[in-house]
Image (tube, rainbow, N blue to C red; front, side, top):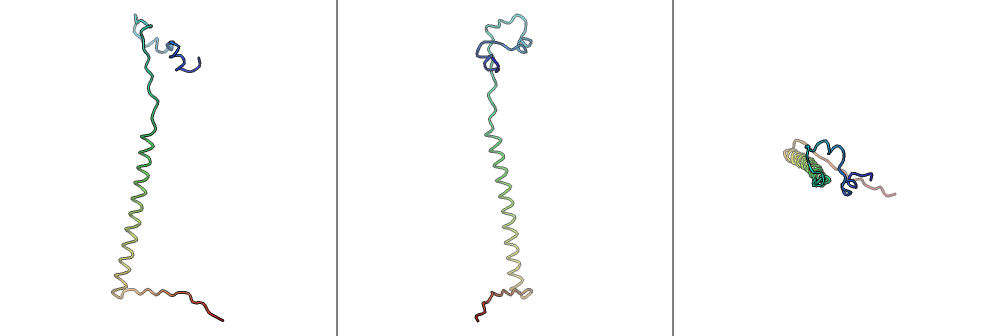
Length: 94
């Protein structure tokens, strides 16, 4: 018996629990309840939610900055304050 759950199944009570029992306790009627193993579903879901929320906020900030830049460029070019010339590359034929 190397594992604690093997001791519990065999009916053995660990020595540290003996010291915690009050005097006169009938050890044949002692029931040891093990704590359930920790579930990691909650912390993992919380981490994914926070990560997704942060990514969404960063994306929304980027879209807002992009829309503001395009709108300001459109306003400036419409009022004549800035000119934007785009040249497409031409191929020279020989």
